Image (tube, rainbow, N blue to C red):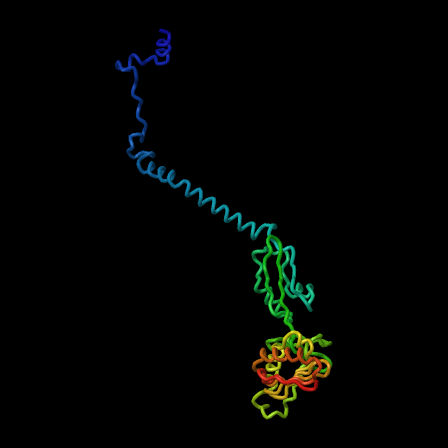
Length: 283
Protein backbone atom coordinates (compact mmCIF):
# COMPACT_ATOMS: atom_id res chain seq x y z
CA UNK A 1 0.00 0.00 0.00
CA UNK A 2 1.09 3.54 -0.53
CA UNK A 3 1.09 4.38 3.13
CA UNK A 4 3.29 1.45 3.99
CA UNK A 5 5.66 2.33 1.22
CA UNK A 6 6.09 5.81 2.52
CA UNK A 7 6.78 4.55 6.02
CA UNK A 8 9.37 2.18 4.72
CA UNK A 9 11.08 4.91 2.78
CA UNK A 10 11.23 6.95 5.93
CA UNK A 11 13.01 4.08 7.76
CA UNK A 12 15.13 2.24 5.24
CA UNK A 13 16.84 0.11 7.82
CA UNK A 14 13.88 -0.74 10.01
CA UNK A 15 13.26 -4.18 8.41
CA UNK A 16 16.84 -5.23 8.86
CA UNK A 17 17.42 -4.02 12.48
CA UNK A 18 13.99 -4.20 14.02
CA UNK A 19 14.13 -7.94 14.81
CA UNK A 20 10.47 -8.29 13.79
CA UNK A 21 9.27 -5.61 16.19
CA UNK A 22 9.14 -2.82 13.68
CA UNK A 23 10.98 -0.36 16.01
CA UNK A 24 14.49 0.21 17.25
CA UNK A 25 15.48 0.91 20.89
CA UNK A 26 16.81 4.48 21.27
CA UNK A 27 20.36 4.71 22.42
CA UNK A 28 20.85 5.83 26.05
CA UNK A 29 22.27 9.26 26.65
CA UNK A 30 24.84 9.90 29.37
CA UNK A 31 23.15 10.53 32.71
CA UNK A 32 19.70 9.44 31.55
CA UNK A 33 19.76 6.40 33.78
CA UNK A 34 19.61 8.66 36.90
CA UNK A 35 23.09 7.81 37.97
CA UNK A 36 25.70 10.49 38.50
CA UNK A 37 25.03 12.69 35.46
CA UNK A 38 23.99 16.38 35.56
CA UNK A 39 20.30 15.43 35.72
CA UNK A 40 20.62 13.06 38.64
CA UNK A 41 18.44 12.92 41.77
CA UNK A 42 20.10 15.97 43.38
CA UNK A 43 19.34 18.19 40.41
CA UNK A 44 15.78 16.98 40.16
CA UNK A 45 15.19 17.67 43.85
CA UNK A 46 16.53 21.21 43.38
CA UNK A 47 14.24 21.73 40.41
CA UNK A 48 11.23 20.52 42.40
CA UNK A 49 12.11 22.85 45.27
CA UNK A 50 12.45 25.83 42.96
CA UNK A 51 9.11 25.03 41.35
CA UNK A 52 7.49 24.76 44.79
CA UNK A 53 9.02 27.96 46.15
CA UNK A 54 8.78 29.98 42.97
CA UNK A 55 5.72 32.04 44.01
CA UNK A 56 7.33 32.83 47.38
CA UNK A 57 10.54 33.98 45.74
CA UNK A 58 8.60 36.09 43.28
CA UNK A 59 6.65 37.69 46.12
CA UNK A 60 9.87 38.46 48.00
CA UNK A 61 11.41 39.94 44.89
CA UNK A 62 8.31 42.09 44.32
CA UNK A 63 8.44 43.29 47.95
CA UNK A 64 12.08 44.27 47.59
CA UNK A 65 11.36 46.16 44.39
CA UNK A 66 8.38 47.92 45.94
CA UNK A 67 10.37 48.88 49.03
CA UNK A 68 13.15 50.23 46.89
CA UNK A 69 10.72 52.15 44.73
CA UNK A 70 8.89 53.50 47.78
CA UNK A 71 12.12 54.69 49.35
CA UNK A 72 13.06 56.45 46.14
CA UNK A 73 9.65 58.16 45.98
CA UNK A 74 9.93 59.33 49.61
CA UNK A 75 13.57 60.37 49.63
CA UNK A 76 14.92 60.69 46.11
CA UNK A 77 12.14 61.95 43.90
CA UNK A 78 10.78 65.47 43.57
CA UNK A 79 7.18 64.33 44.10
CA UNK A 80 6.95 64.51 47.92
CA UNK A 81 8.98 67.56 48.83
CA UNK A 82 8.06 70.60 50.93
CA UNK A 83 6.62 73.29 48.69
CA UNK A 84 4.17 75.12 50.94
CA UNK A 85 4.06 76.07 54.66
CA UNK A 86 0.83 77.39 56.21
CA UNK A 87 0.03 78.84 59.65
CA UNK A 88 -3.15 79.17 61.71
CA UNK A 89 -4.18 80.29 65.19
CA UNK A 90 -2.26 83.56 65.35
CA UNK A 91 -3.89 86.48 67.18
CA UNK A 92 -1.21 89.02 68.08
CA UNK A 93 1.60 87.42 66.11
CA UNK A 94 1.60 87.55 62.33
CA UNK A 95 1.89 84.47 60.08
CA UNK A 96 5.17 85.83 58.73
CA UNK A 97 6.65 85.91 62.24
CA UNK A 98 5.73 82.27 62.77
CA UNK A 99 7.09 81.23 59.36
CA UNK A 100 10.39 83.00 60.01
CA UNK A 101 10.75 81.38 63.44
CA UNK A 102 9.86 77.93 62.13
CA UNK A 103 12.46 78.01 59.33
CA UNK A 104 10.92 74.99 57.60
CA UNK A 105 13.37 73.57 55.02
CA UNK A 106 11.45 74.17 51.80
CA UNK A 107 12.51 71.72 49.10
CA UNK A 108 13.47 68.96 51.53
CA UNK A 109 11.79 65.54 51.32
CA UNK A 110 8.62 65.77 53.37
CA UNK A 111 9.37 62.53 55.21
CA UNK A 112 12.69 63.86 56.55
CA UNK A 113 11.26 67.04 58.13
CA UNK A 114 11.77 67.00 61.92
CA UNK A 115 8.46 68.33 63.24
CA UNK A 116 9.63 68.39 66.88
CA UNK A 117 12.63 70.48 65.96
CA UNK A 118 10.45 72.98 64.11
CA UNK A 119 8.07 73.25 67.07
CA UNK A 120 11.01 73.83 69.41
CA UNK A 121 12.31 76.66 67.23
CA UNK A 122 8.93 78.39 67.19
CA UNK A 123 8.52 78.21 70.99
CA UNK A 124 12.05 79.36 71.73
CA UNK A 125 12.04 82.24 69.28
CA UNK A 126 8.48 83.40 70.00
CA UNK A 127 7.78 83.33 73.77
CA UNK A 128 4.20 84.38 73.10
CA UNK A 129 3.58 80.93 71.62
CA UNK A 130 2.30 78.53 74.26
CA UNK A 131 2.18 75.51 71.95
CA UNK A 132 2.45 74.68 68.26
CA UNK A 133 1.39 71.59 66.34
CA UNK A 134 3.52 70.83 63.28
CA UNK A 135 1.86 68.43 60.84
CA UNK A 136 2.74 67.07 57.43
CA UNK A 137 0.11 67.91 54.82
CA UNK A 138 0.82 65.38 52.09
CA UNK A 139 1.98 65.56 49.40
CA UNK A 140 3.76 68.93 49.56
CA UNK A 141 2.84 70.88 52.70
CA UNK A 142 3.67 71.60 56.33
CA UNK A 143 1.01 73.07 58.63
CA UNK A 144 1.76 75.10 61.76
CA UNK A 145 -1.13 75.44 64.24
CA UNK A 146 -0.22 77.98 66.91
CA UNK A 147 -1.75 78.59 70.34
CA UNK A 148 -0.72 81.94 71.80
CA UNK A 149 -0.42 82.77 75.48
CA UNK A 150 -3.10 85.09 76.79
CA UNK A 151 -2.25 87.72 79.39
CA UNK A 152 -4.32 87.69 82.58
CA UNK A 153 -2.24 90.32 84.34
CA UNK A 154 0.13 93.18 83.48
CA UNK A 155 3.17 94.36 85.41
CA UNK A 156 4.02 97.97 84.73
CA UNK A 157 7.71 98.48 84.04
CA UNK A 158 8.73 102.05 83.31
CA UNK A 159 6.46 103.12 80.46
CA UNK A 160 5.77 99.56 79.26
CA UNK A 161 3.75 96.58 80.41
CA UNK A 162 4.99 93.05 80.95
CA UNK A 163 2.35 90.48 80.02
CA UNK A 164 1.86 87.52 82.38
CA UNK A 165 -0.21 84.44 81.51
CA UNK A 166 -2.31 82.20 83.77
CA UNK A 167 0.77 80.09 84.60
CA UNK A 168 2.71 83.10 85.84
CA UNK A 169 4.95 83.20 82.75
CA UNK A 170 6.17 86.65 81.73
CA UNK A 171 6.12 86.21 77.98
CA UNK A 172 6.16 89.64 76.31
CA UNK A 173 6.40 93.38 76.81
CA UNK A 174 3.87 95.76 75.30
CA UNK A 175 4.18 99.50 74.80
CA UNK A 176 0.43 99.85 75.41
CA UNK A 177 -1.66 97.97 77.93
CA UNK A 178 -3.91 95.42 76.18
CA UNK A 179 -7.59 96.17 76.69
CA UNK A 180 -9.37 94.18 79.38
CA UNK A 181 -6.23 93.04 81.22
CA UNK A 182 -5.75 94.37 84.79
CA UNK A 183 -2.51 95.87 86.05
CA UNK A 184 -0.84 94.41 89.15
CA UNK A 185 0.07 96.68 92.06
CA UNK A 186 2.16 95.11 94.79
CA UNK A 187 2.17 97.03 98.09
CA UNK A 188 3.37 94.27 100.40
CA UNK A 189 6.65 95.85 101.55
CA UNK A 190 5.26 96.61 105.04
CA UNK A 191 3.21 93.44 105.34
CA UNK A 192 4.00 91.20 108.37
CA UNK A 193 3.89 88.22 106.01
CA UNK A 194 6.45 89.78 103.65
CA UNK A 195 9.23 87.44 104.72
CA UNK A 196 7.12 84.34 104.18
CA UNK A 197 5.49 85.48 100.95
CA UNK A 198 7.96 87.32 98.74
CA UNK A 199 6.96 89.28 95.65
CA UNK A 200 7.27 86.26 93.36
CA UNK A 201 4.88 84.25 95.53
CA UNK A 202 2.45 87.18 95.72
CA UNK A 203 2.67 87.57 91.94
CA UNK A 204 1.51 83.96 91.54
CA UNK A 205 -1.33 84.60 93.97
CA UNK A 206 -2.41 87.64 91.97
CA UNK A 207 -2.18 85.65 88.74
CA UNK A 208 -4.38 82.97 90.29
CA UNK A 209 -6.97 85.56 91.31
CA UNK A 210 -6.98 87.14 87.84
CA UNK A 211 -7.33 83.70 86.25
CA UNK A 212 -10.36 82.89 88.43
CA UNK A 213 -12.26 86.01 87.41
CA UNK A 214 -15.31 85.40 85.21
CA UNK A 215 -14.78 86.86 81.74
CA UNK A 216 -17.33 89.63 82.22
CA UNK A 217 -15.71 90.67 85.52
CA UNK A 218 -12.18 90.46 84.12
CA UNK A 219 -13.09 92.94 81.38
CA UNK A 220 -14.17 95.44 84.02
CA UNK A 221 -11.17 94.89 86.30
CA UNK A 222 -8.64 97.69 86.00
CA UNK A 223 -6.23 96.76 88.76
CA UNK A 224 -5.36 93.90 91.11
CA UNK A 225 -3.85 95.34 94.31
CA UNK A 226 -2.02 92.94 96.61
CA UNK A 227 -1.18 94.05 100.13
CA UNK A 228 -0.45 90.59 101.52
CA UNK A 229 -1.23 86.95 100.91
CA UNK A 230 -4.78 87.31 102.22
CA UNK A 231 -5.38 90.92 101.22
CA UNK A 232 -6.22 91.18 97.53
CA UNK A 233 -8.43 94.03 96.30
CA UNK A 234 -9.82 94.49 92.80
CA UNK A 235 -10.37 97.93 91.29
CA UNK A 236 -13.18 97.91 88.72
CA UNK A 237 -14.26 100.49 86.17
CA UNK A 238 -16.42 103.31 87.46
CA UNK A 239 -14.49 103.62 90.74
CA UNK A 240 -15.84 100.36 92.18
CA UNK A 241 -13.74 98.10 94.42
CA UNK A 242 -13.94 94.48 95.52
CA UNK A 243 -12.42 92.95 98.65
CA UNK A 244 -11.30 89.54 97.43
CA UNK A 245 -9.27 88.35 100.39
CA UNK A 246 -6.85 85.47 99.68
CA UNK A 247 -6.57 83.53 96.46
CA UNK A 248 -8.48 80.58 97.92
CA UNK A 249 -11.98 79.62 96.71
CA UNK A 250 -11.49 81.74 93.60
CA UNK A 251 -14.29 80.18 91.55
CA UNK A 252 -16.83 80.56 94.35
CA UNK A 253 -15.80 84.18 94.84
CA UNK A 254 -16.16 84.84 91.13
CA UNK A 255 -19.70 83.48 91.12
CA UNK A 256 -20.60 85.53 94.20
CA UNK A 257 -19.21 88.73 92.67
CA UNK A 258 -21.08 88.14 89.42
CA UNK A 259 -24.32 87.79 91.36
CA UNK A 260 -23.66 90.96 93.38
CA UNK A 261 -22.88 93.01 90.30
CA UNK A 262 -26.20 91.98 88.78
CA UNK A 263 -28.18 92.48 91.98
CA UNK A 264 -26.64 95.87 92.87
CA UNK A 265 -25.37 97.49 89.65
CA UNK A 266 -25.08 100.91 91.30
CA UNK A 267 -23.04 99.77 94.30
CA UNK A 268 -19.43 100.84 94.77
CA UNK A 269 -18.03 98.39 97.32
CA UNK A 270 -18.24 94.62 97.25
CA UNK A 271 -16.83 92.02 99.62
CA UNK A 272 -16.52 88.39 98.54
CA UNK A 273 -13.67 87.39 100.88
CA UNK A 274 -16.17 84.93 102.41
CA UNK A 275 -18.05 83.77 99.32
CA UNK A 276 -20.87 82.16 101.32
CA UNK A 277 -21.60 85.55 102.95
CA UNK A 278 -20.88 88.25 100.33
CA UNK A 279 -21.61 91.91 101.14
CA UNK A 280 -22.27 95.07 99.20
CA UNK A 281 -22.37 98.75 100.19
CA UNK A 282 -22.42 102.25 98.75
CA UNK A 283 -25.43 101.73 96.53
